[in-house]
Image (cartoon, rainbow, N blue to C red; front, side):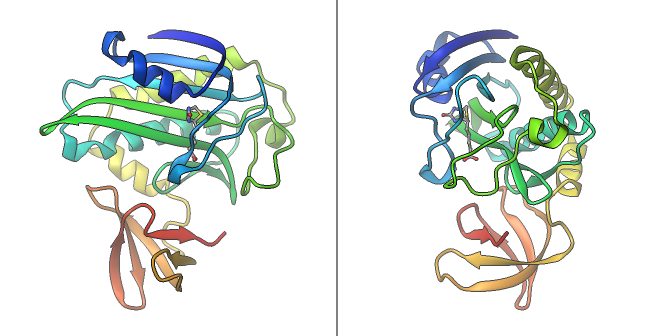
Length: 237
Ligand code: BTN
């Protein structure tokens, strides 16, 4: 594993994507500050300077088929949950790849995969983990940091190394159990909650049962079991 640490860049995902042809598997780009941090759904990612972990991991797995690319998301989220739990804090995975403590988001992940034919060629796993930041812009929904939960101020380098250790351990041991463990760690698994159907705007009640191979979430609704892709539903929290 090789780590390159920038003071300020636009986005670790963008920078590692530019350099990826020459970089080996498991290269990490970390920064104190991003001027154009990217989030999911076309959103940005805001983070106070040198308070949080902002990094991207380049993966070049030799053995993952394009159709199985969801395993990366599962391994990475389980690694992050393991890290948070090592601090004595219970964490869950909000499908597909946010990390929640209670009803608050401690970590967001943006995965950008490159596929060639039926093979996954590379995966850029961008992680924004709220470590020390205590006050957030009101525009950010439900944020929390590890420091706010534990009342400890953390060293960025020590925590980056520890978090990477948990992530790579899960990534290296990925197997059929990874999906089972991912499902059993899902936020709101097995209990009825409210969701919004994005296209219609309608609210419905349903119970998360699991996921399928294509990363859709399976929800038991009044109209039977349905599978939803990312962006097709929103959680009401
Ligand atoms: C989300 O919206 O929840 C995903 C946020 C991902 C943010 C991280 S910060 C490091 C990496 N570089 C980016 O531009 N985005 C990801």
